[in-house]
Image (cartoon, rainbow, N blue to C red; front, side, top):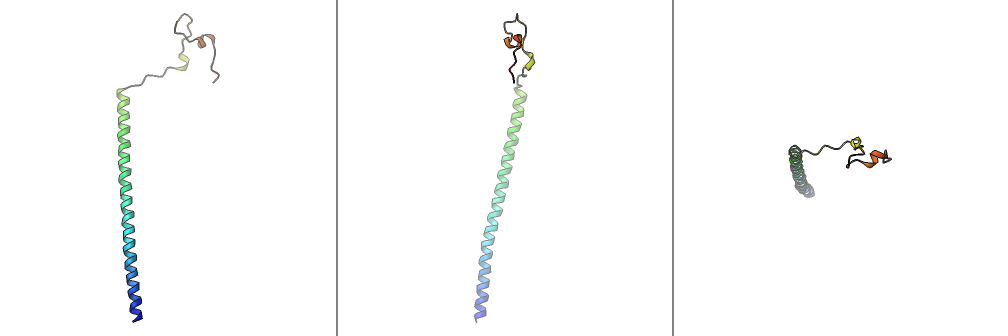
Length: 92
């Protein structure tokens, strides 16, 4: 009779372990799928943002940067750069 009690304890323990392991495993699968869905959603948003930035750049061309050496050195010009006329540098 004592062996049947030991066998029953072993069976119920295995059943309990299987139930808890199954629940844990299902939660980990669900969490992984949720993470993958969020990552896919994030990647989609990033793609839409980059497409919108590209379209914005097409429709709103930025001004061309002025060249650093393009300062006016003509002393007769009222918009001339005084530092360029005098030959003063920034020291950078």
